[in-house]
Amino acid sequence: MDLYVVLIFLLLEISLVFAGCEDEWPSCHKGRNTVCERNEECGALGNCETGPMNPETRKKLVDTHNILRNQMAGGDPKMSSIKAANMRVLSYDTGLQHTAACHINRCKFEHDKCRGTKKFKTAGQNLYMSTARSSGQKLAFSDPQKFAQNGVESWYSEIEIANPADIADTYKFVPGTGHWTQMIWAETTHIGCATSGSTDSKHYSYLNCNYGPGGNILDVKLFEHGDPCTKCPEGLKCSEQYSNLCGEEDASMLDVDFGAGDGGNGVEIKSGSFVTILLTVLVVFRLM
Image: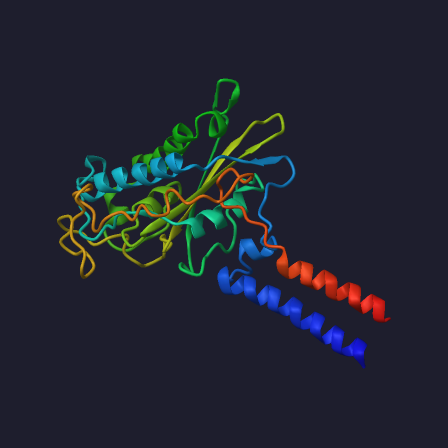
């Protein structure tokens, strides 16, 4: 009888581990969250190493996004000076950074299926890969701020492919412009990013930024057309720093310290629950 009780306890413990993960990192219609798929152990895999993500690099990522969003909302000449009336200022989010790190620490240049957080059930994603080097190192490691800026500016450069008709009404998929449209999605409010690099002969550097709430939703407007800040959400007004964007940046997460050994990418190994399971298994074998 004791053995059956312990087995039941073991099954309950296992179910709680997985349920606990999905409470924090929700699944989506495409499958389990990337964090839970990796059992929350999101360190680098195989020929991959975690890149640095310090406060200065986070700030560069947020600033570059906001500068370009401000440019777009104010009427970028490359897009017939169309203006956005409700585009938000972006702030940094460490939850999005964690999901980004879990994915990009595999050094695969492909989108994951499910990257939401407790705060943002759905999240968008932009990826960038480069072979650029500086001082004999991959740029993501030798000059992370330059690498971050290059990546964001590369995404925005897709404006060269787009045309005003693409954003005249609701979002429609246009090949080659998805990074740019996610960047200028008006209702996105937060980003979280991570970097990595391959240790093989290819020497690739990778950047992954996740966006909350995610954009690129079919048949939904990228933004409301009109003079900047004339349709800000209730309680928000034009930013003091970015005069064409709604709201102010929350910089509270720029300096969050994830601890040594993870490059600042927010990689965290949660092992307590699995230790409990292991101990329970040992008890089972002792009773058998």
